[in-house]
Image 1 (tube, one colour):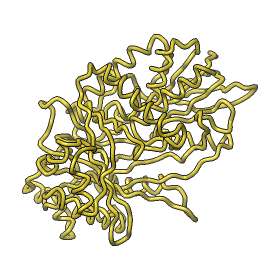
Image 2 (cartoon, rainbow, N blue to C red):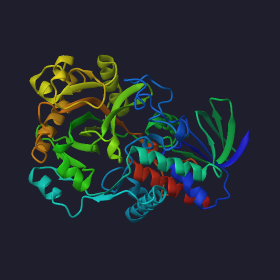
Image 3 (cartoon, one colour):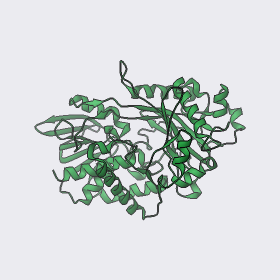
Length: 457
């Protein structure tokens, strides 16, 4: 059994930036980070490598697990804002939250060589155009690195920290005990480690695990929401006038039929649609590249409807999983439908897809999303598409592609204080797994802050 001062479970955005800050501070703390996934250089998806044309259920999924977490192989987009992406500002305050995200941005730029562009929704006429069409553009600064550069940045961060921080990859924490002010961690490999301070940072993929740990220690949690929707793919020209200005446009719309809120999420100009595998459930996401030679002719983004439950059903994640499983059952993975077919009440078929002018970037199964998505959410999404068509003509074209389903799982909000500590002494929760953050910028910022807090302890 090996003793540590700090053990962090999860090497995602929060864990990796905690490792960076511990290293930069020249801490005398002995720190171990455990992750179910692999090192950066070993995180390869067979689909993106062209070895297969569909998800083969790699365990663990290299897109979701490993150093840098789900953010490593994402499109490398960091939104610097407190208007969305989590509630970090409610823990540390708005000014500190912004300072931490700006700091994260400076670190990423240093490792990147200062080559990326910082976009902003300020000083554009897009907000006014949206308001005139009953749409609401949220303010933010956006740094985009691209999937390929983001991976190189995370590799450089790992190289910087690996001699200071101990790592255990391909390792799952199966048991956590607490006695005499020490935590004992037992892994699936039969190893045991002790620490004074334990940081839960396992991201969205580890949301169920974090809930179990919190339940075991009597830590209060508030059930969170689940976002369900589709990934939209259109010719890049449709949104070019918007993406050239702001790159990422977070647009919110309140539907007239149900008064539900629908929002755009994770916009990828000239990008590609990809799959994700979370605990055997295949959902859809999007990536984009900075290198023009890797770019496509399409832009993709999600349209998401938030769902929160009270009585008697409270497990929002289980609700999202059940819809994703239904999609997997009908399509063997991801379903694909033309918007024109959806409106006409017919499934998309191989024959109809051959006539489609918009070429899909993901090999998905043509089908009928109305058999998967609940009617309310489907109605919301259709209404949002027509609303967006007013500011981006062509959005509601027959050949607009809809991939389903896209599900964003959120952990229950773990009750923590201003130092991210739960009521259980020495037990901390950060990042997306804590329910506090929902973005790369905020999760990374929480990792920086926890390292500073524990270094001074």
